[in-house]
Length: 563
Image 1 (tube, helix red, strand yellow):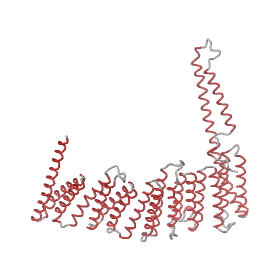
Image 2 (spheres, rainbow, N blue to C red):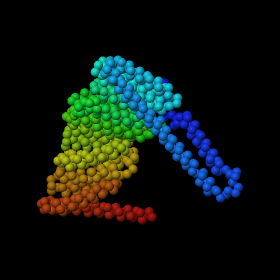
Image 3 (cartoon, rainbow, N blue to C red):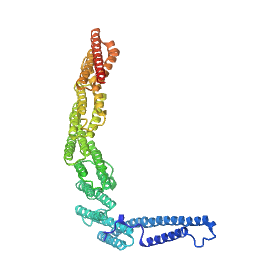
Image 4 (cartoon, rainbow, N blue to C red):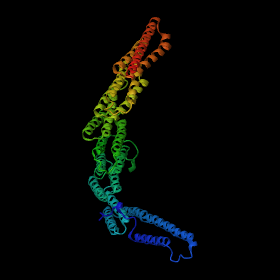
């Protein structure tokens, strides 16, 4: 009855209007031919050329204006009034059903409702040949009426005709999926979206966790199926917001149904269903692109899944698991890392596996914080950073490197500005920074790093954390001496590794040491320690100067010889 009601394939105008427009076009063509063809009576009338031109253009402009007005008027009448009339019809039949139930009984009201559905379907079938858009709007109205009438078998009724909510739920879902079936046949993403909305509304209407959450999962699975089958990416993204939004609506007491606004008193294991939503939406990575959607949909859905899942999960943690969230984050970390590994072997897109790996490491950071707390947790967090960087070599992922660098810098700054100095953490941060810089330099081609900015960031952190660690690790009178030793170590690294960056770190360390010696140690150190500090710094500075002067001369001589 409804197979040919495809709005995407409807003609813009009816048959009669098409004939009218063809007639107008024929008149215009005739006028143009008359004006372009030499007039049979043109002899002796050459001076009237400008007048003919004026007479030729004026009717054409008027015809264009007439056509535009006709099109606008016809669209307003055909589409606007058809939609308005269908909406009014739905409300009229709805109020008639309520009136019948209030004054007679539920059975008569239900029979009237299904009878109205049949009548509207019949009217749509009768009009589909000549008035396709009107038939299309009536078809949607009939499906909505069928949904509402089925709902009234249990809901919105003091004495339900069918007392079992579960049975009515099955019937309502059957009505929705019937609508969805025809939406798929008509290739209508809009109608499929209406079906998803109806499923979620039904879930909230049940207002019982053991019914609400499975129905929401059904909505997520349906949207994913339509994405796999039809490539309807817009519907998938909208469904993500709607499904998580429906979960939030339940979390705050379902106020849209008239309940008082407030957080639910028991978690009802709703967090388990959040995992289910995320797992379903994460299947996007396995859907092959057959030209039905843009490649950016993969990254978009992964990011949205992470953001929406994390947001709703944080509501649960802050409300119910403030002191016992470690198992939840541990589960998130294990699941994301496992899925990332699966994607590495099954999917060629590096971005997908990298994002899930990053989510896993962020969840692992929360686990470390929950187990060890701060400031002791900084020690494990810094080692975790080194582990993540090592894992990025296996993934060959620049995204993981960038995110890990950002997290490591954030951890370091948080520790330096909020925590008391702890030698173990100080040297661990310094070691992690230096080791990370070496790993990046070692595998920068495999990681496809175009610039030295990431490595320079780690070396900069290493420079400051080494000074910071030595400052608090040694007695005050040996600070200058320890910093000078650090400069010597940098010089040695530069020679062994043939890397100029360590020479600059050595020179910068000597500059900081000299500044500290003159402006701090001169006031506080005893004479004996002062002599040792000055002499040692002088030896290091002069020795480095002589070494590099000799090296530069040797290099210039070799260049002259080669020339």
